[in-house]
Amino acid sequence: MNIRRAIVAKFIAVAGIAGVLLIAPASAIASPGLATADLIAASDAVAASATCRVMSIMARKEGGGKIPASLELLRTQLRSDQFAAYRSFELLEERRIVLRDGKGGFAQMKIGYDVKLNLLGRDASRLKLHLRLIAKGSAKPLLDADYSVLDNGMLLVVAGMRDRGRALFAFQCRATS
Amino acid sequence: MNETERAACAYFDDELESVQREQFEARLRNDAGLRDQMAAWSSIRELVVGEAEAATSDLADARFEQIWDQVEASLDRPSDARIPSPVSRGLGARLKWLWPALAATAATAVVLFWWSGEGNGPDSEVQVARATDTAPSIAGDPTSPRLDGGFGAPVSNDLQIDRIEFAGRVGQIAKIPGAKGTTTVIWVQEEPQPFDSERSL
Image (cartoon, rainbow over all chains, first blue to last red; front, side, top):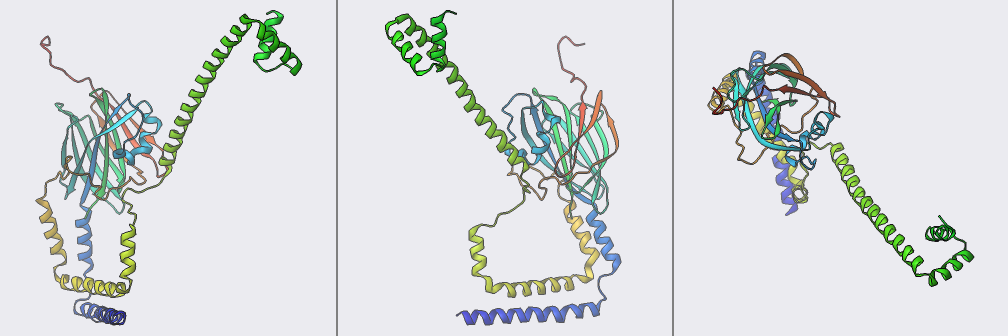
């Protein structure tokens, strides 16, 4: 039985390698590879999209000082001196905003803010983004900023008081294909 | 403090020599008032020592909690890390003889796919883009199970702010240093929220 398996495996392996050796050069001769222009166009199409994660968090001065598991990725930041006045953190909502081909994305957060994000551009490693954070009922954005960040990098924004706590937002964007 | 009280204090603190101790104990047996006083001191000491021990035990727990938090904080665990289960290892080991064949077949499939799609290069990208255009901009559903979606823990952020405007009264940009770089925090002081009231005109 084992001998049969070994024979079958070797046959498939030989067939596969033969396929690689025969088909790849043939296709390269028939059409001398993908044109460089095609590759650039494809990479441009990939570059023009990103996905952003928006987390709304409530920071309160009361509580046991524990970081919930849902906010584990922000442990270092929430434990820092910047947030020393706050004893509890609660992840209220997490949304995804897909940014594509220069189109902006929009999310109405339940905490009472609207988030507008736009992908302004991207180079090899950085995303350039336009962020607007608008308090519900307000005409003017509370925050209006252009920033660039490494892929998968994070920005924290601490906004106003809501429900006996401070509204906090985490924005994390990554390039997508 | 008289001689008796001084001796009582020394006895209570276990500072008497053996001879003096025996003399004091003989005196203690005949003096009910002295026994009451020693009993009172003992009660006070038990209370004080008991409180201190309780406080010490709480402190030990708190310290342990703090140390554990520090250990957790220092762990570098990407959230998308996957620990292979023993079951999958066993399966892999059992199918070890098949891996070369699978690898060769996969390589062939990749080459065939590349070859067959060669003529459509840029068009296929456009088709993908158009197909995904129909998807809603907001893909997140807070009620659905949370999926990481490939985000994972933030990497070195190295964020640069090119332009910023605050509608509120005050804005501040701060940096949080970390093992993987700094994280930028923008603090915005919001204007007081307007509220509806029957008195407001």
